[in-house]
Figure (cartoon, rainbow, N blue to C red):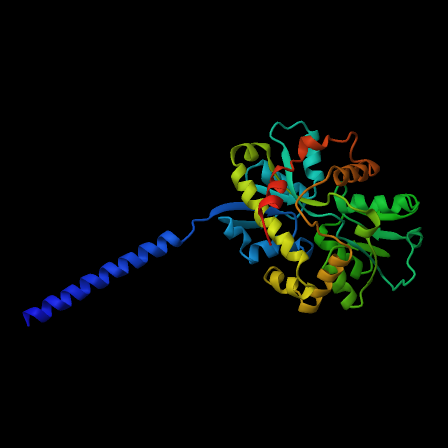
Length: 339
């Protein structure tokens, strides 16, 4: 009996030791993640590379956990960054240009770019298979927020085709971003500039017809990018590098997979969107070459953005490229990250 009791006790001790070792091993193997507060301008399929990077675990591979919030406007996203409500902002680079122009000491610096074309589409009330921009003369277009890149790009394209906003065509700019489609459906305007998936949803409901891509019309431009404050780059360049690495891996994944695979990868971010709409939208963005192949913001793309801003009367003097853009993190990501 005594021998049996000793044997049982020995077995229990061994089991406890083995259990403790296993728990310690599991704890050591578990990677502690650094939380990065990211504020995106809006939730859009247009930003698929970002959602792919999140859902495919590319940020976790870099030791980062993304805490994502949606600002509902570039001005609100920039305000969140400047008031330390987020670590990284994601919006149009015009927000960084405006802040630098205000003379702020701790201004925003762009370090990675996602999209290289305007992601909005002109939707007509009726089908116009032979659409020409001349068709908009004397009509009413529901546009975007004054000073925002979508609205400025729309005006830039109109002027390029000899249509002067306010004179040859009326543009409604006082509606909230989320209210433009509803206003159009209710009978306001002859055309509306919409992002996806809203544009395709209107087509599916026979409430409108996509007649032109603003992105194709305007050309390659610094359209949507990641930025952070100068102080964050100075204090925590490692975090920015890891973020850029993960994002770049998302870019590589996007360009090596089909529209169907991309739609499946980002579906959780758009629970209310039909699968066919997701695939249609992704195909459309691929067709117009909307997504950058790497995170670098080029001087030419920023220059076109500032030209668009000047044409819209929103910018007096161009900002020097090197003042608000760094290629350091993008170039290092390209060198080190493999598909």
